[in-house]
Structures are given as C-alpha cells and as structure tokens.
Image 1 (cartoon, rainbow, N blue to C red):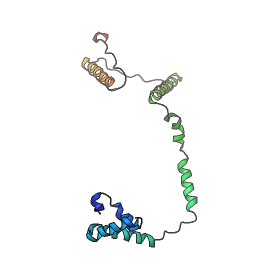
Image 2 (tube, one colour):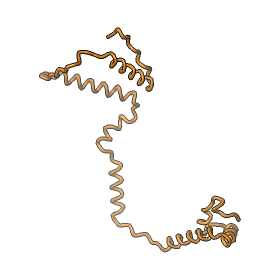
Image 3 (tube, rainbow, N blue to C red):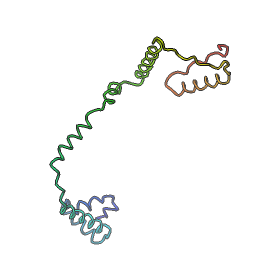
Image 4 (cartoon, helix red, strand yellow):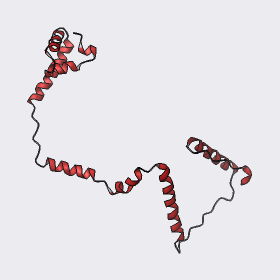
Length: 161
C-alpha cells in the first residue's frame, strides 16, 4: 500500500483509528504502518482522540436550557421597529426608491415653506461666477455621467451664461 499521507488521503488513518475500514484495507494499512513512522504516529494520535472521546461525558443540560433557548430564538425572530418600517422598501429597486425619496423631500420642503409666519432667511450669493469654476463643474458632471448608467448630460453653450 502506498502512504496515505503522500497519496493525499490522510483520512484513511482517522478511519482506521475509528475502526471504520474494511478488513482488507485495514490489514494493508497495518502493513504499511509497520514501516512508516509518520503514519504510525498519526494513527496513534487519532486513536488517542477516540479513546478520550469514549471516556468523556457531556455535562448535563439544565432544566431551564430549553426555555432560555426558545426565548432567545423568539427574540431574534421578532423584528425591531426599524426593520418593520424598512421591510416594505427592501424589495424595491433603487430606481424606484430614489424618486420616491426625492418626492417626499420636496413635499416636506413645500409644507415647511407654506407655513404662515415662517420666513426663510435670505442667503447671499456670490455676485460673480468664475468661468473656470463653471467649466470644472461641467467636466465633473460629464465624468460622472460617463461612470453611471445614464447618458452624459449635454454640455450647455458658453454664451448661455
């Protein structure tokens, strides 16, 4: 018999130690182990593990183990309030979720702006726009359009400003 370790089948030694091999294979392996110290050592290690497992006794399970286990399973199975809110939207593709979110935001802004007595502070914008900033912004938008699925936005004419 060829060496099971060299052959890539070291599990034969574990099966031999467990007594799971047929008589023919077991006797061939015993003859091989008479001359192969590595296999003999490995089989002895497996045999030692099996002997320890035969002697070992599992500790008794407490009477409350099942009750605690089922309580934990139930707690894990019960979704949190956040998961219950988000669950309907999980199956929704991103293409549907983005417009829905944008529409919700616009409605909220509209409601806030329509409230009487609410004034929106005036923001001061820069009086001048530098042309190089506009060109860089347009270049960035074009690059992002090429990276995404959408077609790149058409570049406006320079005289539109």
